[in-house]
Structure formats: structure tokens, C-alpha cells
Image (cartoon, rainbow, N blue to C red; front, side, top):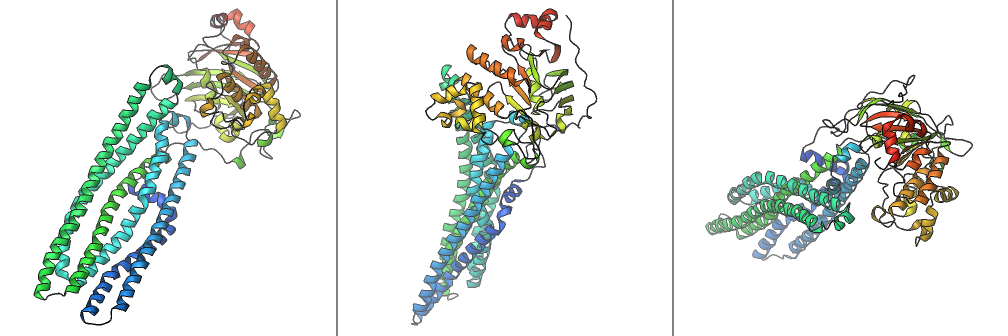
Length: 624
């Protein structure tokens, strides 16, 4: 058995330094409070305005007991009380209005912070490296974008208001109570100190239980995404009951952790309520004794009790604020964890080569006589070369590529064949820079792919994946994915080449028909044709087809094979072959086995000298 020699790649630019391994974090972890403040910092001016307005309203509330004392004193001495009553009424109304305005401003700030966090998370998730996404559960990412940011919105105003307004007003209230009667204040503070100790002990437990609850909610999202991602398989396997059980267990975990958090919050709230009742009874008893002894007047006792009633909700607000701060901090930490995941560094569209045709970037894309987009030098196709490439998907896993070397010239059709697990699809993933090789070089157009700007690299490539994903939305949206709407004549041409014009003609709204979740309203073959049409509309310089016709019937497969052959005349086309009919028309065939290039040649050459290829061909390559 002979092997065709792998072509050496020489005279190219030196390999770029290997990038830092993916899957880690891009910076040190922040504490929960720092993470929460980081989300609120851009809106500090608006938050400060809301706090000032709310504080002014609270200060007006503090004047109300003094105004009530003045009313009682005037009435006791027979003086007219109309003026003080009017002042008291004005204070009540103005205080309530300002408190409402302050609350509105804080809520608006929270909504802005949440919107910004969701936008940052969306941008971050879409720029994550492929290995990071593969090591992360999609359902958990969804939970962090939705439920965790919702918690941020719910808790931020209460936490900030309690931390600033609640603290200042509580201190002012205590000072005014001391001015009225220092003895009663000491009695009150002795009771209030009790709740402070309880809150200090309970607050960390609230935060820990909240984090566990959010993690459990994330696991519900993970379980649900798993089921919806294979919905028909679950039904066909009769696995509804089993999968429902998994969802129920995840929900039960969330319930248990939620109950635990609620229990600690209840302890905190109960302590606050007890303080109010006990303080009132103690002050009422001690104050009554002081009134009886003549130490203070009745109006002073009433004013003190009014301050006590005003202090009670402030203490409750502080206690609740501490709990909400723990909840918000836990949510902020989970959001911060996503924002620290490794991402790809994709250049802005202004500095990248856009897709061909209407999507091209002026000055960066040249156009050949045939109307195809190319590099600045007018090239319309790119050669590909692998030079001693070794690759492992993750540390400790078996090696997928063992010094893979081959070269493919610009233009022409090259087929990759071999048993399952030979590393054929990995070739495409390395070209697209979804992963980085452990060693060796992958070259496109004579240049290491690590030296290409990512946006430019991918704009030159049309890629049809093995599972041909179709996104929810209209057929037109899927065809124009990643670029502007193609010209009508170009769209018509590609629809005809891929026989999608017949499909669009059958749909109720043509190209504007919604294809459903993951293209569920289309057949497998129709989804493959959508993916191929989408790739052709990019007018790529390199077309990667990973078993792109495996679900097509013979007639459509033959038509698309002719289309691919025609495209290969002025474009480099790489195909992971599934059918012998595709392989026999290829200009060259790369036979892979166990992560190595076994042989390279034409169909006739390989049939004569490579036993594995001969065996695969005799079984119609169905094992590939």
C-alpha cells in the first residue's frame, strides 16, 4: 500500500504565535458588591438624582412629627392650628410626591442598567470562542441573560435606596429622636441593636442561598434546552416521562434552594417586625412613666412615637436592602462570569473585507470579470495548505490530527474521504479558526490563518455544516444571514441552481414564509439546499461543504453536484464526501484515517494503489 507524499509548504510567512488557550477567563473575578456597582456605575448621575429627590421627600417626612407636635401644642394652648395643619398637609403631600419621583428615577436607571447588561451579554455570547460554548450549557447562558438580569433590575433600586437614602434618613431620625428625649432614644436603640446582630448573621446566608437558587434555575434552562433541541427524538423514543422527570427534579432543586433563601429572608423580616412591636411597647411604657413624672410633655411623647413609627419601616428597608443587595450581588457575579469568558477578537466591519456583491466593503474587495468578489489583488479563489498540523480538542483528550499535511491549489474540487472519526470535519473547523492547532500551520492563500483578521477570513469562506442549521425566521432572512439582502437577479440565479425556487413557489408566502424553529417546517433536504444557497450567495473564494448533500434525493443531489462542479471552475471547493458520485468528479481526493493523511490522488489513481479508498469506494463511501 503506497501513500502519496504530502506536499511541503515552503516560502510562507512565519507562523503566528500560538494564542492563549481558550476556555479561561479574561480577567480576575470581582466580588459580588463590586460587580453590582460595576453595572450601576455608568448611570450614577441618574441614580444620584433619584436618590437626592427621594432624600428630599424623606426629609419632608422627618418634619411631619415636629409639625404634628406644633399642632398639638397650639391646640393645647388655645391658639389657632390652621397654619400648622396646612403645613403638615403640605409636607405629607410633597413628601409622597418626591418619594414617588425618586423611585421612578431609580427604576429607570435600573432598567437602563439591565438593558445594557443584556446587550453586553448578547454581544459577548455571540463572540465567544467555539470551545468555550461547547464547554458551557446553552440553557445556563440563557438563564443568565434573562432571569439573572431581571434580578438585577428588581434588586438594584432597593439596594441602592436602602444603602444611601435609608441610612441617611435613619441616622437623621435617630438624631431628632435624641433631641426630643435622650432617655427614650437609648431604650429604643437597645432594642434595635438586637436586629442588627441578626441581620449581620443572616445576610451572607441569604446571598449564598440566592446564588444556589439561580444556579438551579440555570439547570432548568439546561434541561429544557436539551429536550427542545431534540424534541422529535424525545417523542419518537417515548421519553417524555423520563425527560419530564429530569425537569421536575431541576424544578424541585430550584424550589428547595428558593425555600432556603425565603427562610433566611423571613428570619430577617421577622426580626425587623419584632423590633417594631417591642420598641413601641417599651417606648410607650417608658414614655408614659416620663409623662407622668413631668419629665416630658404628651406632645413630645406623641412626636417621639411618630418618629418611632417612621423609623420602623426605615429599619425594615435597611434589612430588606441588605437582603436585596445579596440577591443583586449574586446575580451580578453570574453575569460577570459570562463577561469574563474568552471571546474572539473580530474587527469592526469598517476594517474588514465584507461578503461579496452587495455585502462587500468598498476599497477592500475587488471584482473580477465574472463579477465574483476577490481580494484586493483581484483573486477569486484561495489555495489551502496544512503543514504538519497537530490538534486536540481539549487537554487530556485523544489527538484528532497527527501532523496532517496536504496542499490544495486555488480553484478546483477537492474531496476528503475516510472512516468516521478520521478528522475530516476538523479540517474545516481549523480553516475557519473555530479552533487553533496545537502545532503546525494552516495556510489560506499562502498566509497563516492566524494572521488573517477573523472577519476578513470568514467573509472569504462559504461554509455548509454537517447538520445544516436553519434559524427561526423567514426563508429570505436565512438566505441573507450575515450580510445585506442580495440583488434580485443574483438571488433568482442561486435559487434556481439549488432548486429552492420550487420550494419557495410551494410556500404560502414564498421567501417571506416563516420556516419555524430550527427550520422545522422544511424537510432535511430543503434545509440542506438553504444552507448551500446561503453559502453561494456569499460568492466565496473558498467553499467548504461538509456532507452537504447527504439528505438530498438522487435528482436534487445530481443537480447540486453539477452546481458545485461549475462553481469549482473559479472557486476553491473542499468537500467532505458522503457519496461516491461526488468523489469521482473531484480534481483530487484526500484520504484520511485516524487523524492522518493516508493518500492523495484522483479516483482512478487511488482505486489502483490505496486499499482503504478501494474498500470505501466499493461500499459507496457510506462509512464516510
